[in-house]
Image 1: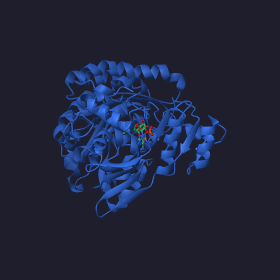
Image 2 (image 1 turned 180 degrees about the horizontal axis):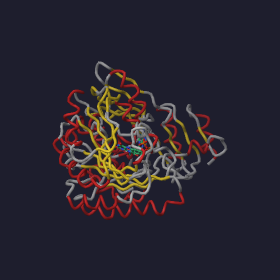
Image 3 (image 1 turned 45 degrees about the vertical axis):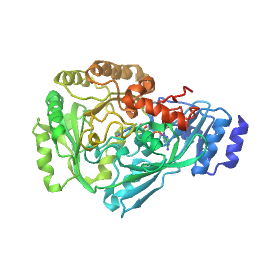
Image 4 (image 1 turned 90 degrees about the horizontal axis):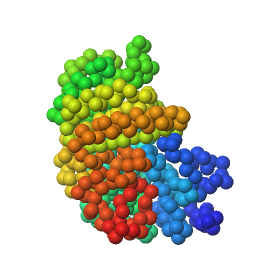
Length: 460
Ligand SMILES: Cc1cc2nc3c(=O)[nH]c(=O)nc-3n(C[C@H](O)[C@H](O)[C@H](O)COP(=O)(O)OP(=O)(O)OC[C@H]3O[C@@H](n4cnc5c(N)ncnc54)[C@H](O)[C@@H]3O)c2cc1C
């Protein structure tokens, strides 16, 4: 095996980090602190040539290959024991074409880098709600965030991707070339190759009006119902998700509420500022707002506002569904389990995926659940591994109780844990069979299997 590492060290331009290096522990660490895996080497690729070299080395030595963008995968797909980690974090360049409103983004960039590069032009690409998340994993799974209702999922704004395939070729996938690959990349995860560059359509987003509005837990059922009813019809420039939140000790939080379990609506209005109060009023009218931090702010400020609440290295265990209808019965179950939210970083988030996201056909991209109203996630996030059992139990009990009310077997692949791998067929619904065929065409030997795996149609 040392021959492989030796050859990689001599050929890779970026860098090869092995257990013998002092920065090995830092290099192998991924976001979810639960995954303490020990790869043979972390290869920090500098360019597509390095990517080709690492894929070839893994194949020749029959080593498991983990591909890492931002490293945020809750199941820890960005690392592997006794295999190779292909780390793209050095390939994080972001270039903006302000005339065509296009961003070209390296396969290892984070959303913070994209926001930073697009904001000065008054533009943005639709990413998620945390700036440290990787562009690659989030995009390849679908991409849900503040702009979903107005401009669609992240994949709905993907124009093309440069991909190094399992056989070492680099191709471009778009509506005009390798169309089957482009279809599969938009939701099918890291199953088809290593994306070295993404090209996104940008949209006019500068300073938004938004931020969190907090309500007393006793009003939670009313807030969930009022939010459900309003977000179904609200202007599409309004992004807004619901969550449970133990009140943080921040300047806008009344001192006597710090530590209380509250519920929160996090808003993002990307329309004319003078209309913001009118648009947000129905949410304010649901119940008394006990604290808020809503105002005009740069879009990147909202996108990074909660980064500190969920730092790298904590324990993470998540469960997810898609839901068609949030019934009153389901709301009662949410309130029952939300009441036991065990940690300030844990929550259940309810993200709307209506509006522009629903105007894309279920078979137009691999992301098949285009008729769904919400993408909920029960996200258990806590510090101490000694508390794993209790926190995992909270997530499982909550999920077991709410899942029968989802009206769907599938969920968002990016919001799942490592014990959800068998859910892949349900997560893609009618698109799964086609995904398995595209997988067989581009990765018949399943080289890219450290992911929520789509088994090649030929059964490899
Ligand atoms: C704190 C936090 C907040 C989040 N918020 C959101 C959100 O608002 N919206 C949302 O939609 N999701 C969100 N997610 C989920 C997120 O989309 C997934 O965790 C996603 O997989 C992260 O991508 P990554 O590149 O950081 O992860 P990684 O762990 O690096 O990779 C995830 C998967 O993508 C593959 N992959 C990575 N890079 C490449 C590449 N260049 N080419 C091919 N395959 C690649 C990996 O092999 C792996 O299977 C969040 C996750 C966390 C932990």
